[in-house]
Length: 332
Ligand SMILES: O=C(O)CCC(=O)c1ccccc1C(=O)O
Ligand SMILES: [Mg+2]
Image 1: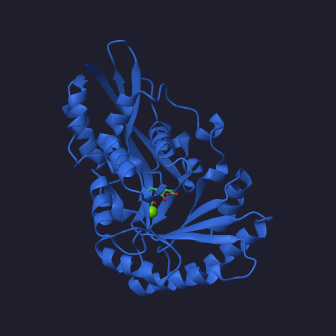
Image 2: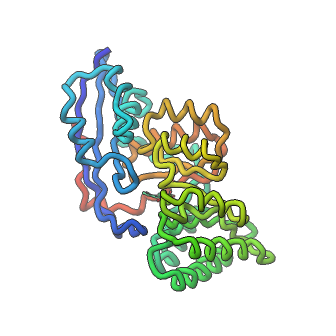
């Protein structure tokens, strides 16, 4: 079967630039795909590359889309190179036709998931304290905070304030905090953070649980992260190290049984990812790459299918964009 293929690029501006240990990110660029079959049935997909994470770049994805003809087959889609994982995701999602019209309803308006099933993303630094209050009011009870951005002494201080504020907000319920270093710590800093988190777990009557430390060290230091899991109680989650399915498989084969952060939009072919997750019992956290509702819906559908009762979903990022200063033209 041949599909008529059309695409549009988009640009979305962050309200406040995303700061990670990789640097500062101001604008999210991506591509919306539209496939129309011979019965005029439409499937939508999204390519949201993250080149600093190891996926193809926006330019490479755009070159690929431009190189295709206006009518493409399933064979073309299922033979997209593994070098283009975000394209594999976008085209396969469009093929599945599960997303009917852009933009699909936000998941929390559909009623199938509550805010408490998402993790809200806090900005790096002290401003996280006011962001926490806002996200708490919206119903989030799991939060992720970026570390490895400022000097460690400063971040440890904000961390103590953050968990105190969280504990004060808790009324019999529990709250969870994830720390994401984006590979920006050295070994001794990683030890300091893990020890600090282990200490939090021993505070009597404390309502805040440190769920995990995400990607403390760089991708090249897999063995060291594996070693750290044997020393500290606080779990470690790999993110950059498992950016695509090949890397997920590699880390699994090298003995990783800690948490895997899966970002479906850059992980590669969803059908291959499905196969892997169905044959290996992994502890997974699904996470956003700041895709639009189209990619997000496809990613969440996969997450819910594969891990129906999993950890909070890392898709609590809706407040991050300023769409009055964005170019989002889905009017095909
Ligand atoms: O995972 C989440 O909760 C939010 C998404 C997130 O942190 C993220 C978003 C875009 C790029 C990288 C990352 C990351 O996890 O490092
Ligand atoms: Mg991360």
